[in-house]
Image (cartoon, rainbow, N blue to C red; front, side):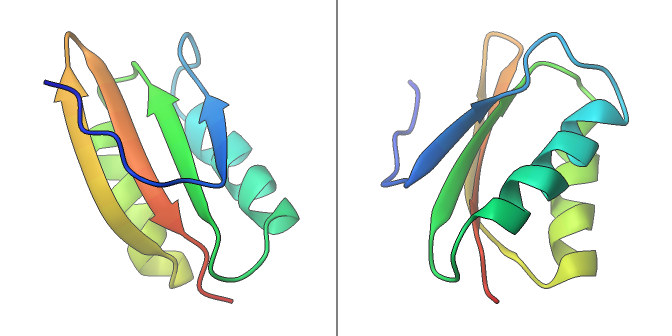
Length: 80
């Protein structure tokens, strides 16, 4: 079952391989306002570790994530 969370924007990074999902995530987050939530959709298995690590490093909040059928969804709240 896919968990759907409230989000302000969605970025589909399916088909992109490491490091591009993180590069595109960082760029997209710069365009967003503090408090907004981005849904990142990726199919690169490396994103399971990369996205939480990026959030820890940048101070943005990973508010949810799930996986179904090899597709990962991350919900990231911009903190600043």
